[in-house]
Image (cartoon, rainbow, N blue to C red; front, side, top):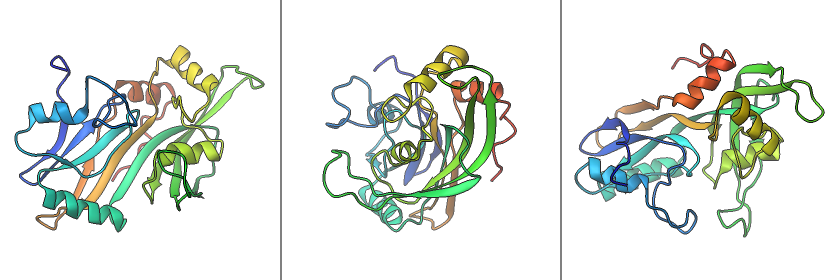
Length: 239
């Protein structure tokens, strides 16, 4: 942990901060992630003085914008905004196949234990780009992939990953809910060893100032490598 790279801070003031979470890094200790020697919150406490409280979470494999409050009061107010669904969240995902240009997945999901009564879960998307890759796999001589801008309206456990699994447009690099053949293809041919799901943008009301806070997390090297390989670098939307 002492040798871990510093986290990229996207925003910092006296009330809250935002960090660009790397893929593969658990946010904090929990029974879901098991024992580890490196957690985002532990790294963050070495960089930022004072108390820190998570406002929301990203799973270990997902990268991108993560909000952290610097007091319990700010954390509670951000929590209220999230519960009221007034926080805008935009994810980038690369999926198998060519889904419709836009659509939604309205499919209830159970919690992290995968037991209990499923709760309502809604995910919307719009398609930004498509590609046909001339690499044979299985029955097909070419593979189709799409770049999506995804907006989860609810925040269920692994919602985006499980929803796109449900509609058979699996997210590339997803070792839990994806397709092993496509994961191997992007590793072997494009050098991508991570889940291609990134919490790209978040928009919320600053709990102290009342101003609109718009934050964006840059993509990492593996994401950019794939965007270049698929000729998608110009397909990311402006604000």
